[in-house]
Image 1 (cartoon, rainbow, N blue to C red):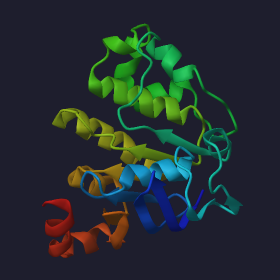
Image 2 (cartoon, one colour; image 1 turned 135 degrees about the vertical axis):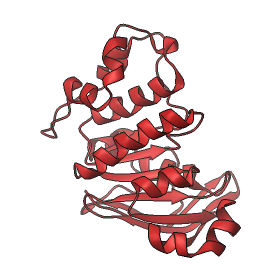
Image 3 (cartoon, helix red, strand yellow; image 1 turned 90 degrees about the horizontal axis):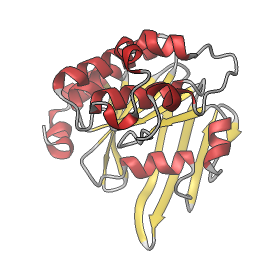
Image 4 (cartoon, rainbow, N blue to C red; image 1 turned 90 degrees about the vertical axis):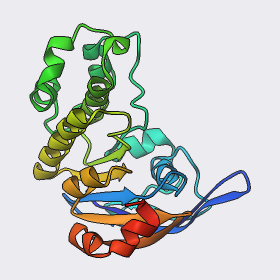
Length: 231
């Protein structure tokens, strides 16, 4: 699935947060959206999935215009979100969290395949969400999204609050998803994780895209990293 965002404008009240954001994710491509806190990354994701209604611009998946569609219609179009903060249901078991919104549309994702991606969850299937570590909760959140059989997976800060070892494990899983041909849009502040997973990157600052290019081009643009990413 392809994603094409053009000249997107979004507001919170009278605050003009997104100021003409344009980005693309190609079929089977992995793209990262980078920037400091407050740059507009999460608002971009929220405008794509329908949590925030854009006041201008367009969002298209394949040849379908989903601009300002409600979230359930965006999901029906084949887009799944792994939200910031994971949002695992504390009172449900891991199995229940994973399967609560599962569907099959021929994409091939089922519980067995999720457990193959995250083997450590198999022994935790009967545990409640509030009995999991942060890393396990993140694996559940990703697995829950995959069980929607998406063609495009959006991930908002998947490494947030995780120990380095768990960041590596999540990164391993995202690389495997990329290699499987799933289209990915990854919002991250962890530059090492983002550039490991993504083939191309966009950098945001104050609601605008200030850089786009390959990961190699970003590495060569030291001024961009220093100015906008704090590296």
